Image (cartoon, rainbow, N blue to C red; front, side, top):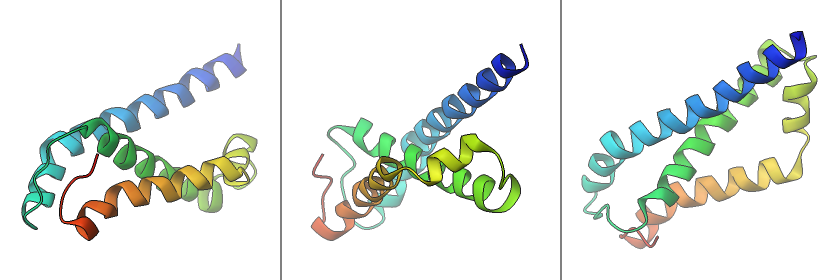
Amino acid sequence: MQVFIKDVGRSIELFFFLALGFYLTVNMAGNWYGRYGIEFIGNIWVNWFGISYFLFVVYIAIMGFLIFKEVKFYNRFLTSKIFWLLFVGSIYIIVVPFLKGENPF
C-alpha cells in the first residue's frame, strides 16, 4: 500500500508539471515571445511540452542531486539517456523561436 501511495504522489507530480507548463504557456509564453516580435501561433502544444518538460527536468535534478540523493525514482531519471535527450529537445523547442524569429511548430 505504501508503494501505491508513493506512485500516486509521483504521478500527481507529473500532472502538476503538465498543468504548470500549460498555465505558463497560455499566460506567459505568448507575452514573452511577443516582446521579441514572435507571433505565438501554430501548434502551441509543442511549446507546452517543451516548457513542461523543462520544468520537470529542473525539478528532478534538484530532487535527485540535492535533496533525495538515494531515492531510486529520481536516480533512474538522472541516469536515463532518453530523459536527457528529451531535455535537449525541450530546450530546442523553447529557444528555436528566438533563433528563427517565428514559432516554427
